[in-house]
Length: 495
Ligand code: B12
Ligand code: SF4
Image (cartoon, rainbow, N blue to C red; front, top):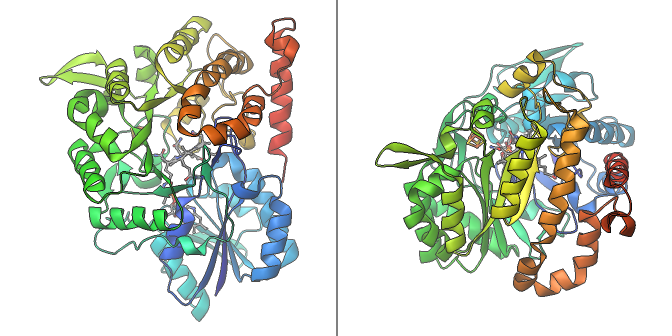
């Protein structure tokens, strides 16, 4: 069969496409796990942002797919719906399948769309079985994890158990299936690699538990190293490890760093997301190893520096420093210190705008970010489908916006007991732009040519909506904020 797999072009404020165009790891993993006679093409539409329609038009003409698959996050739902309509218009007999976090956790949203099939949860095996059934004209009834149409009703097959990632149950991704190019992270070609799946924590804002339950499964190191080599051989100079929580087993993570060093793969740059407690409690050993393995930016899920907010986010445990088994308070500063001493940069993930937040509590978090983090990644709590937090926000009557295309994490869609959603977002936006600016010299030292060539665009993106007058303080910054919001609204409507 001829299959076209697409990820959506929408990006959010912290991922300006000029500097960050990351591949979607799900699609190449699907491509690597179907029977080899199928012709699979993977197109990450972030690479053609602003030209998605034309590109899809072209690819549909060239590839003439029998099946088109869409990988969708919640904030991309409207874009997906529009592109699905385009596929239908161009080739009505093509089957359409959707998968990823949004279709898995809110399948009901897709049942009204021109969609034939929904893959819920992990996709590799379900998708392989789906292609076999389509090819043979078999029934779909025995494929776990699949929702499908039967006459005018939808049938939701039972969930598929999560894969244990043992042996070659899940084969390596197929990067050669990609038909677009231009991936980048600050000017270096980037690729994504997984070493594990799952997490056993249950942070209230995170979709992972509803997606796959509380579990943690790992790939063996031979497979991980082969995957990194394959990414490198396809041109990558930077690797983003996309595990849900790679630091859940710190001993394993340390062994992985050693394996990367021993395999000579430490010339590549690595980006990773880590838990503060893991780094704080094991920093003495893990941080120097990370440095030697080539880790450069570490996204720390700090979430919030105030205990009450951490309790609401159910993120206290993963932010606690321990000594001799006893709790020693918030782990964040200790974790940051270990990373800085080992010359890594900290991307500080913070969530502001929780139910009890006041202007002062938000400012305390912003001040923390100014002082301690190298690159701010500050978001607002966002009620994604079926997370525990979503329930809490609805019970408290704090959800003010149900336009899913705005659920991108930097648009405040809930208010607090004390502040409007708009006020929360304004406070973050106003502060964060300047924090980003401060990181430019460090980025310049690593990738001078990229920064020289693109600094004006990056600056313009960071200060979107601002004018010379507003930067000099001659115009109220709320005017600039309104312009920024208008730019974001127009940008969301690109498809
Ligand atoms: C790595 C990651 C990122 C990375 C890299 C993204 C990339 N291009 O790969 C970065 C840091 C850039 C990122 C950014 C964002 N992310 Co993110 N990210 C993740 C993370 C940690 C892992 C995703 C991953 O690659 N997994 C590995 C792949 C193989 O698994 P998978 O994606 O689940 O795919 C499997 C199935 O879903 C299914 N499948 C997926 N697509 C399809 C398509 C078809 C056709 C089929 C059949 C099956 C299928 O099969 C796949 C293989 O089993 C998750 C989960 C988590 N713990 O936080 C969040 C997560 C996906 N991100 C999320 C969000 C919201 C974002 C942001 C909007 C903002 C934010 N909160 O950071 C931005 C948007 C980025 C943008 N486009 O501008 C949410 C999505 C929630 C939702 N309901 O939409 C998650 C779940 C985190 C959360 N808040 O709970 N993210
Ligand atoms: S530790 Fe990370 S992956 Fe695990 S539940 Fe919390 S936010 Fe999600």
